[in-house]
Image (tube, rainbow, N blue to C red):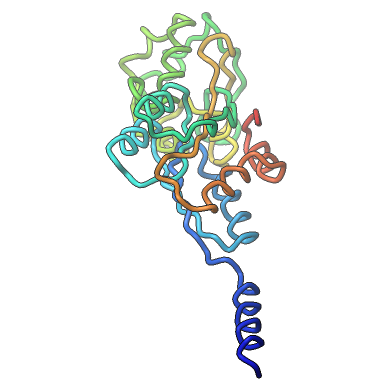
Length: 252
């Protein structure tokens, strides 16, 4: 074999090798877990890349990113926390988009809770009795903030404020109702879909709180082509079907 042929053969072999697997690190709101885990599995199977997702309250994730935590993509459950990250110059220009929407619901433990109309006349305090209303932290976690805003707009907050059991994220609030530790809770529609041990009692009027929007963005920490590939995959039809099946509203 001539030297030229040997070089050509070696080059052809190199080009035939699949691209090295890369890792994508995603910081995502806890409410996304069920659907996003499915999207991640689909992406990994199709590309060979590895996706690591850190789930928590959007407030916690935003603060971690601003403190220097290594993340490639951020999916927040509220616009304000993405705004904070963007103000710090940590979002790649032109990559931010509104990915998903959601609805706020009142849930109960078990599968046969009666439907109620959620409005100013709802005797939520009477429904609770001496027990607790499970919510995410009302001062900082988006689901808790939306929930408090809705209760205040309906005039229900003063009567239940003292009965609220606050959790660090919405999935933790869901778990309290799922296990029966709290009879009722306020979570997203997608959370109720993800848990067979709870049922939806009613849906909060959309005009009782700010629109629930999940913005997504590539972060300046991102360095691999896989990061952009996963960002694009989130808005593709297959991912949209996964999100829709779990109760999310697909916006992008």
